[in-house]
Image (cartoon, rainbow, N blue to C red; front, side):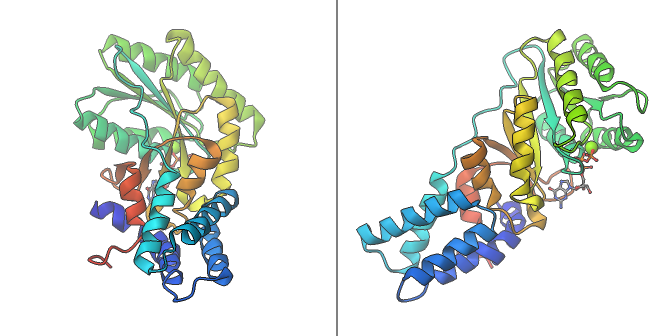
Length: 303
Ligand SMILES: Nc1nc2c(ncn2[C@@H]2O[C@H](COP(=O)(O)OP(=O)(O)OP(=O)(O)O)[C@@H](O)[C@H]2O)c(=O)[nH]1
Ligand SMILES: [Mg+2]
């Protein structure tokens, strides 16, 4: 809970704290709502979602006659919470080998997140194997191997610049032969607008499906929290290319745009499974909507 509050510090102090202050005035009028609207948009909640949210808040204030700051903040929290669903359990159990496919643009945090995720799942009793499907950058293979060492999880890698499909094929075979119950596949970062690279991603997915027809069982799109609304248009391209099943939002500790989580639910209809709140192996949290909404506001006892 503390690491979440710490991770959301910037978002809380920049925008949601100011929203709470704005709602503290004695007379709530159009200017108040304009200000709230502007702050929500700046926090990257998204224009459509913001307009709907403010409309609902105005309706509540009219109907319920609430005026006190505490009640207003509580109503806003409820409305925000209503925009989020509890993420469904990941579809990675109940079979011999499950596959998680990790995709996203350059530098969004894929490899780091895989290290953290492998560590978490290993501690939860799983036997993960990692596939170094990013053969594009030479350093990418070593980076994943280093995360594998930290997490205590083995890595299957090929030569730099070799065919990523071949590496992933080998990794599936190795996972089966060695009795792993989970394969997590790293991929090269790519710009969502580069058609050839997106096709390559679809091909790698095809290689996995040739061996395991219902795989990948989870395709998680890693979104850099500092990019805010830009992440949404990226996401749509990935959704068209490889059936994305969920999102992981990284770097929430270094952004004030934590409102993008609401836009991901509302505009992309994707559940958020995990959030990244730092660079160490411990800084991946399961996404809990109640705690997340709480973490956006000061709760009195914490700064
Ligand atoms: N502060 C912070 N930094 C993070 C987080 N997740 C990743 N990073 C940093 O983001 C940078 C890029 O992370 P990578 O894991 O290499 O990203 P990638 O998507 O694999 O990058 P490419 O393979 O080049 O596409 C690194 O410096 C990470 O330490 C996070 O939750 N918080
Ligand atoms: Mg990487």
